[in-house]
Length: 127
Image 1 (cartoon, rainbow, N blue to C red):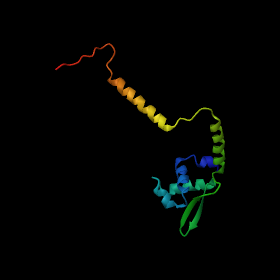
Image 2: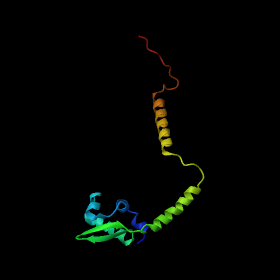
Image 3: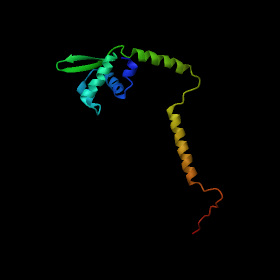
Image 4: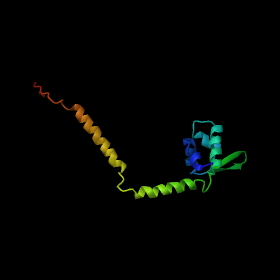
């Protein structure tokens, strides 16, 4: 099976992320998701067929781990994209700058909502 097809599913991507921290039993992997143990096992079989994970039998349990080089095709492809991305002209905008822009847009919208409509005369109340 193609590794790109295997990691196309969000549950399988989450399993790969979890296994990047070290081997885990099916029961441990199931605890992280709201799906059944047999469903997790099916996802692991797909990842195994793609060569991304492998299983070791320890007593009556199966311990899954990432297979070294299992994601090599994906890493190679992403590496090629990185070369294209770095060749693209123009600076990247830091996220904190966009947060400041969002704040200013909200502030301007709030101020505009409180402004006196054009053509009306403001009167001061005297008391």
